[in-house]
Amino acid sequence: MTEIKLKIPKNLLKKMKKHPEIKWETIAQSALERYIEKIEITENLTSSSKLTIDDINEISNEITKRSWQRHKEYLEKLKQ
Image (cartoon, rainbow, N blue to C red):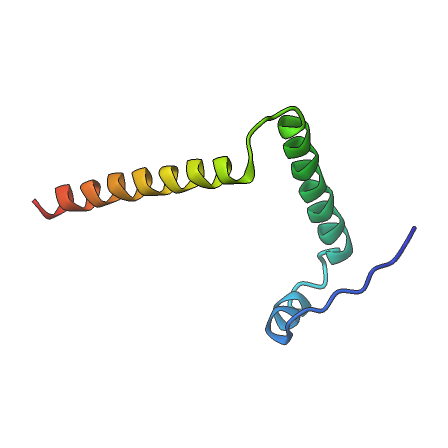
């Protein structure tokens, strides 16, 4: 098995040291595996897509705009 080095901020390391019973190596390995799974799922879903980056950005911007609008309407209703 290959080893990798991680840089961990001091404040995070301090918190981790409070829990020596946890196998942090296993946690890190699991997180990496889950992240790779997400990448592979995304690649499989998009491998035959004809969308361009510009198309994706446009869709993303529209989703953000509509989401913000709904949130704004929700906040306005709370004020009433």
